[in-house]
Length: 607
Image (spheres, rainbow, N blue to C red):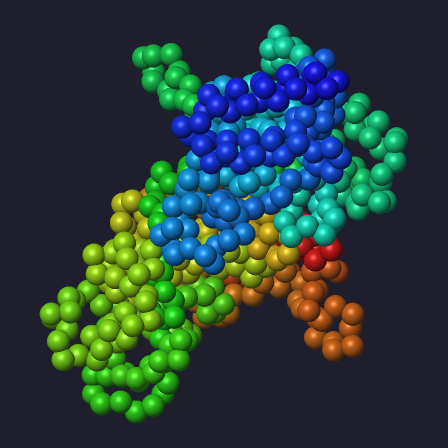
């Protein structure tokens, strides 16, 4: 046993020495650990490479690897992880970059041809390290964040598992969150094949969504039944969606087609495994089938970009105080304690939060803040209050912050082209896509959208469609639902670009007039949350058990056309009919949206 350990130590030191140019610091630290271990007479340490040296010498790894890796967003990955306060912004940014590069490098030492997106959260690296210590034929089980199933950085992990492993199960619970995690989690079961020949095209990965808490259904017969399921199955306990390995690979690539050439398969870009196979109801696939020639990617017909990031909100966002001011000036204050006059020409109305939206039109009277929007140099600003404010900001050190310092003039947010449609980055139960006027600026909490044709009629349809129930349906399936301690679903620019939208031909003035009339109606009232919009009013009884959470008592099967807000129903009907959905299929969509939103909100508060 001692001889095996010594040989293992030599192998480790030799391996680490080989990469000392890239891992110098880690090598020194590791060598120090090894030396301290060799000098000890009493075992008060644990290092699996040494304590389990015989496992690798004789078996080639562990039979089973089980883990619950930490969830650390890529923005927070740094070296060392817990000493942020000791470094300046630039030093901290550089250390994060270096540490992430070292994580990527360490994984590449374990696996060949691994693609790791540097935006990956920390738990992704644990997958590669965990699988590397698993012996061929062994079983791997992780409980971790579900985000890799749907976000861009998960594509590399999806591809690695499909091409090198035999993933068996991805298990979710739509009734409650697992443990008391701050994020939504899934259980993943994977087998490491004994060799590549064991990987078959028809290997099946089962996506299982339990519809009841685990403590109610953790019985052997339940899992035996799941093991037998060979096709899409849904009952009161679970939903099982079996997918063949080859199908998942094909769905994750784009195909470049040319009528004169063989189709060209582009690199694997990933797929929405969580949205499609754990959350999507059957009607989703009916819509895709019926709309295969009637749906297009939003990114094919519209441009999408995010609103500006100030880098120093306490400087750029100012609130009018209401105090009298000379002509051309406005008396304002910021959240850092400053208040005074600034020229009105440099203060623009800004929508900073989705909570400021009341209707589908952004109204200036609903907005709380002004944004400091100045494109002039200090020379041009001589003698102005704006210049004095900039100098005040520099005394506070705002100009040294990374985002501000990256601009030619740190106080200049730039000139932004006009995009008429605003999509909320974070989504709650009340969701509205808004139209804005040219004089209102937009914060990073929104995506900006406009038709590529820059045509009013197309902007009108895109903006109204994005307010429809079908758009919300696709959002609940394709969004990244990973914040377990909140009620948010998060969309990214690429997700929004890849979302589907019906084609509409403006071949008659009648269609445009109808859309214009719907926009006018919707702009005259406050947009309510989706439960209220679809006919489930909030409870007003103060003694009731659910005054703040009426969705707990919503019964999706009770939705009907006559309950839905008339103007909303009018909009939805145009969208549904463009895809050829029957009235029963339309009701299925309404029921599915209510079920998806309700389940997401209940799961968020389940622990």
